[in-house]
Length: 511
Image 1 (cartoon, rainbow, N blue to C red):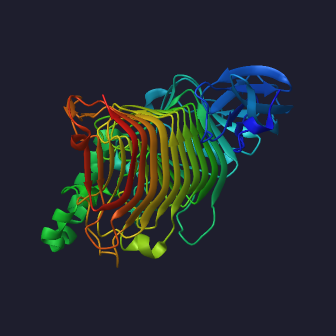
Image 2: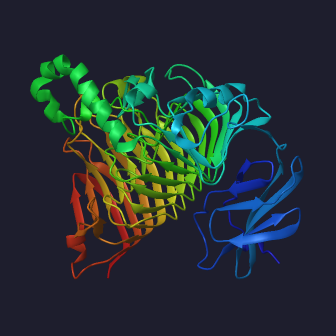
Image 3: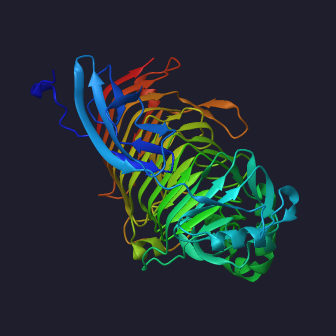
């Protein structure tokens, strides 16, 4: 029997993704959990399953049917807390098969299908889904609209070309915190307007297939072409280019993403392999309620090959995903000085959980933070096989802030919260950024990083470096219940602290 003295004051709050035959429920992990716990999932009063994760999918459901789903948190003595939702599955959608008339797309990996697939997209109504069967369907940039679904069958590949002309016309976008014209992405949702509302809503992209773009070759072709086109401007900049990451930074900013969402709302990406964008793979700008689950990201060898990048966006969630990325697995951003300070749209209410990095830079906040970043929750992630681990970063010029970050129950190569000096072009903000109110707890740190050549190197386990300006030290940072693979080093050797204040170190062990 449940005792009121044992009740967990936190309540589970369920959110869900629904299709015609499945419901995925997910929820935030309670802050206080017993050592032994599990979640029990009930469907219409019957036990559907149990898990220690904070998401669960019920499959094999009937279309247009009502289900009452309840999630209960148990310890050894019984139920601590619960929440329930009542959902109705969707109708079974009519499939628009791109290989059938009038579209007649050909999945031989050679035939260009842009026109055929775009017509299928344009024809797709709210009760329909564009269906891509097994095969390799070569295409250029495609544009999606509100209230549509794209479904990729197992072994279906939506294959973007590596030719820059297939990603025209250019669109208004944002890259590394600056609004600019970029090449169209493979999939494009919405139109960029930092003062406008949402222009593409209620879109589902799902299945067991692959969405892949032109990767390294497409990136190189864009950079070569844009460097020639911008040669007079680049010559005018002269030594200022040294403030950029490399000589390819400015022409490279125009590369297309794999999937670009601008002013989009209520978008689901589920079950897919997302591969080889010419730069970032999934990029959402000024968007809201973007959910990504059970996807695998590949971009090894692609410069700036980030996986999932919420940019001045809100209520974005990713879970159950696996990363093999050349750059950041997840990168949370909000604009770059000075433009980001003026637009002033923070990135907030971001949730990342049950994700794994097998190769990549890890879970990153910044360096574009000029619009502010807040209310970030990361839990149950494994980024031990990463270059940067869990990192918060920004340059002194950025302005803005990072605050209210809570990272827990994770494995990582290292932790960094620090000022950096690269990618430092742009007019400085009036003040440096503020890093504050960050909690790291129940973290296992390997103390070794996975380099881009797949070799391992030793590194400092925890770095906290604020800004060397009075009033802008990193502040109110807590490390609680941290285990560090010590390699014979002392705790002092595992920490690098500079320009910081009120750093709490509670129960940190070096093995």
